[in-house]
Length: 216
Image (cartoon, rainbow, N blue to C red; front, top):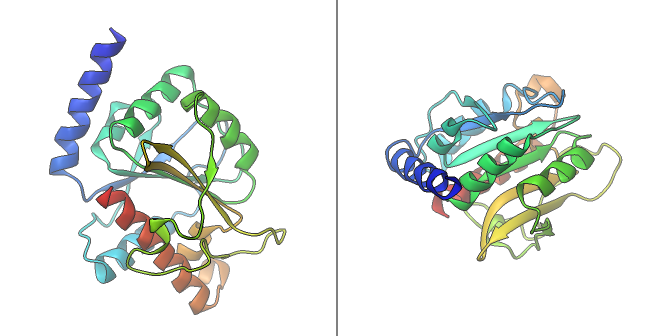
């Protein structure tokens, strides 16, 4: 039964990936964390990408739940928040199948979710660990070049920004950005009052992530 389920999910992903590849979604998860934070972030990133890297993404991102087959409609899913994250075993299995079938998840720590998401990712991939991406990874040299890797957008406690990933046969299928807070940089300028050059770096890095996800 499990093998049949995997095959059906894979065929569902292929069908929607081919017909609706220019839509993206936000992941709704359990545990009490604010998965809905930064509401203006993705719409602004979508607008930037459509204007600058030739995408045709629907202006309003959808919301999907971790255990739903709806996730297979989207080649890119965004996850963020400040606090607790919880995946049931069924949700973890669903996310694993989605990712191994060609999906991509970008988890952007909005400051505070890191210990919780690490714990839950063990459920999704008990056989794989997060690996830090070097500055030479292709995600940092798509449309825009970041020679030192992930940019620092918000200081918080002053730690260096880090990008971690989970891979399958060399393909980056999950990106976890930590101590950068890209989503805050994507938000409307009045939300955080970031300088324009900082917002531009955040949007350009976000565009690189989306471009990489769509191509790989």
